Length: 62
Image (tube, rainbow, N blue to C red; front, side):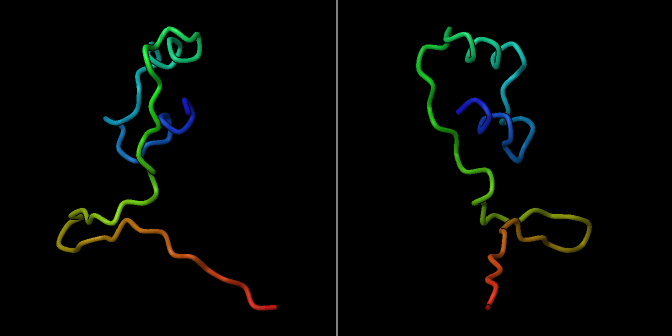
């Protein structure tokens, strides 16, 4: 769970190193599951265009 917190898309959503150490040492009150960092369907503005932050699934045909 700690690793999932550390790979959040937005840096502001990631824990500090102090918080990570506390989580790993078991000093945190209750460790909750973070949101899926790759399931965002929101868009962000980049210059004059919008980017979709979804990942596409590619299936291989044998």
